[in-house]
Image (tube, rainbow, N blue to C red; front, side):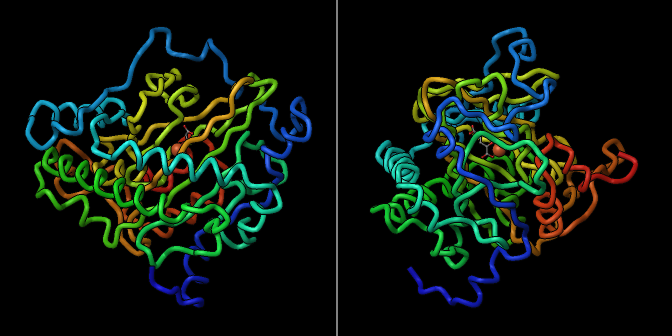
Length: 363
Ligand SMILES: O=C(O)CCC(=O)C(=O)O
Ligand SMILES: [Fe+2]
């Protein structure tokens, strides 16, 4: 681990955005498990309702990662999953069970720390990394029923170690090994998708410039009235691609599909992968980032671990030449990733409304 230069680590992330401080939901529940402050109670239309679920039981595609390098059909399935769903699960990704368990244990150990210790890692008023909440921009907006720890993990020079919980033995090693493995899996997915888009294997990876990786540990406490709140508001990810390690037992993640919410049932050890906004822009909308949300429940707290693959902030994003033609008019602008991330982080999450930034005026 390189010693960080204080001044440059101060600058990293500064200027990306910030979020207003809010009370920890875990603490609210610990003090009084029946208390649901007004700021968490959604307007009626936004509450999670069974009637908004897809009328049939649907399952997002499941990709056998181990077949991708040898099986054209599996690659085609991956391509179709990105086109039709924007979400899929991968099995046989080769990340050892021990690596997944270690990562989950490190996340759990962090949220189990006493409140005053967790507060040592609180987001600063001008930063996004650390313990707190994201996308809180006004005192009036509704809040998510969750606490998060957000950290830049790769490249190593982007880490702000003051937010890394040294109180949790093994935290850094667990995140290190897990992040390296996720990076391998993500690059393999990018390589296969590059091939499916008739481009050189390295193309999608190269388009990131110096690829960045961030991790978001989400902790959703139990809620005495889950029908009134949301664990995480509907949003799409402003990444190129995201990989999520979910709880093996608690079902909570839901995605938009054909105007309805489809629950994603956990498959033990599988990763849930989704297309991010930037991938949508690169492909001129052939792949779409999909709105998703998480609900809560009365019985069991849930954790999830999201990894975001991000381009270098200075990289220019826009539809790839291969994706634009006489029959495929350009739908997205050219923009600098930094401008997009700033725009996104300056507003509350509201479905895909922030993606308007990427679109050409007439779209
Ligand atoms: O907890 C989940 O299932 C979803 C988390 C998520 O969407 C995110 O962290 O961006
Ligand atoms: Fe997300």
